[in-house]
Amino acid sequence: MSSSVSAVQRGRAAGRKTAPGPILLMGAPGVGKGTQAKELVKLWGIPQISTGDLLRANVAQDTSLGRVAKEIMGRGELVPDSLVDEMVAVRLQQPDAAKGYILDGFPRTLGQAGWLDGRLAAQPKPLPVVAVSIQVDYNQLLRRITGRRNCPVCQTIYNIYVNPPRRDGFCDVEGAALVQRADDTEQVFKERMRAYAALTAPVVEHYRALGRFAEVNGDRPIAEVAAGIVAAVERLRETA
Image (cartoon, rainbow, N blue to C red):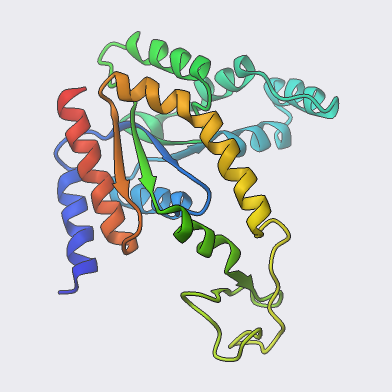
């Protein structure tokens, strides 16, 4: 049995000990947060709730909240916390979120964190949010982001540092010239990292002070990182 398979099995075994409850999955750009969210969805059978997806869905479905959001965005303004909170509240009432969910992009601010904590505390059998941050070395993240190249034909993604094509600059499958996204540059990455740190630091400290925050090494195989997140959630749930 490979170490990857055994890690997944350990994760599933750990996940059966208790309901996972609400989990805030955090991580800087490039840590693999989206990949890990998908792994946790499979392991626990709970939904991933992304505020970006919620916002787009409400606008596309022309809900009352979506119409308000569309008008605000049309003026070039940011959607206020209160409106995002309402969208999240509606989503959390759906049956698939009953035993837990993975929060992606929410709460982003102390105000949102306070609103969510208060809402959950008012429930009959409250399970509070636990926050897990995926950590990867800055230079490693920089290589992940700036080394990305993708095929414009088949969309295969390469990395010139860790997963290069056989022929430099060309797709192994299509032979097409690989392209680099305009935002996969060092300058853009540095700006995104600064914005991420400034935005999330208060939220991190909020949950750390409550004893509901853990960090997981993200510079490992996907299944091992997933198992580490599951173990961290279990530890936090024992004390939360």
